[in-house]
Image (cartoon, rainbow, N blue to C red; front, side, top):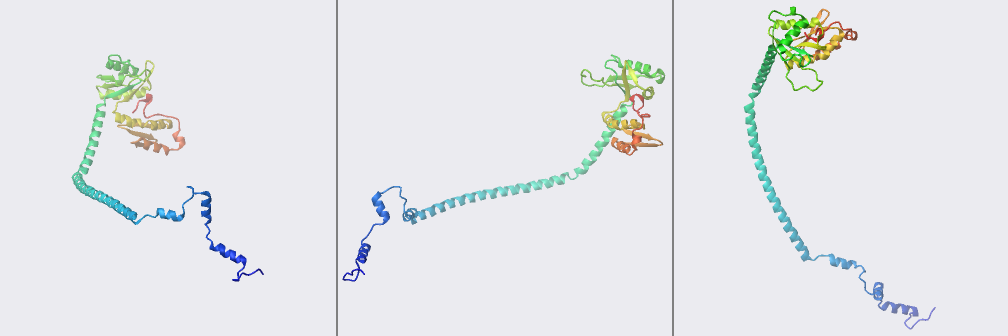
Length: 313
């Protein structure tokens, strides 16, 4: 055991009490005193809070500013809303007015539906009559196709009369056989190598016209100076297009050896055995041909309804 002082404490205990009673600087303070102040030392949390924490006056000023801004925005929204209401009201009035006008127009034009339908029927009827009148006016006409340009010279009527008599025989024609008019189909100047334009001839007597068609079929292929010539009836463009639509069907009929002929204005008559069929469209005729046996469709050609030389009936 060590020695005890008069108060009963050892020497080490006395040194400890003395050390605790003596004030000592904090480690950070000691380091600051040794190193000196520096601008790089970060501020303490208490200092940051003291700097960031606004005062009551600043808070009040911020609230007042926010209130003023919000009030201004609300006033602007009120103005815009008022303008939108005015525009909506104007639009509502215009819509109501438009609905009224539309209703009035519908009531006004309601009777015109029947009127238009009636007029359409009349137009169709008048168009058909005009088409029929045009084709009737062409009844005495024939078209010569393949005649070289310039062959008719300056007197086409005299040339056609002489050529028909020479080609078909004078006995074919009546005593009053006359070609009233003859002219080429008016078109733009033909480019080099283009086929010659058809020549239209008008007969004074309809019987002579029919006699030429019949004689041309019997004669077969007609020629002039080595050029192959064909003679066709002269129809309006509408009828020509309708008849042209049968070209494929007529080719199939010729290949099958089935007799056929064209009736005015554009009706196909087909004779098969003891039965006769009539078709008003090429599609109907094609469908009928499809029903025939394949051997029948491809049988050798016997005769064609257009006659020899490509002259249609």
